[in-house]
Image (tube, rainbow, N blue to C red; front, side, top):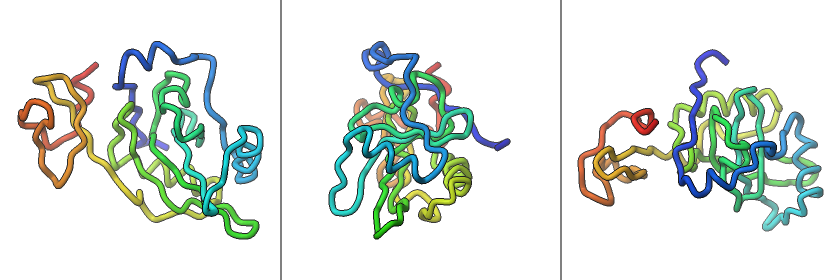
Length: 174
């Protein structure tokens, strides 16, 4: 997909140092791969749903890992096209995506990453929401070097109080 923007890891150095570069989470190339991952990884379905960590890799593939794993670990330390949390729901023999977000403080993807997420989910032919059910805005504070989650459209650093830019700026962190 032409317009997909790659995101590099911007999270904790301690977490990045623990990443196994040979590992990547479980690639989902068809819906049945989700059920196979659940069984192989001993995941527990609660209330007919399961939340997982997800990334869209540079090959435009959905990759998932246990919800408690870091996105950078799911990605094997590589750049991604999207990252967040995905909720799979189960109804009779059907698996579908009931909730999905761009919640990843490791990659801080823009809400615009939805475009590639939607493309990949459409390719898998899995039912999904029309957009992120929760979309987050992240900003980097150049003053105190922290990651901020924007709440209520207030662009102010939660740590030092500095003004934050209206536009995504993690490219300043490289």
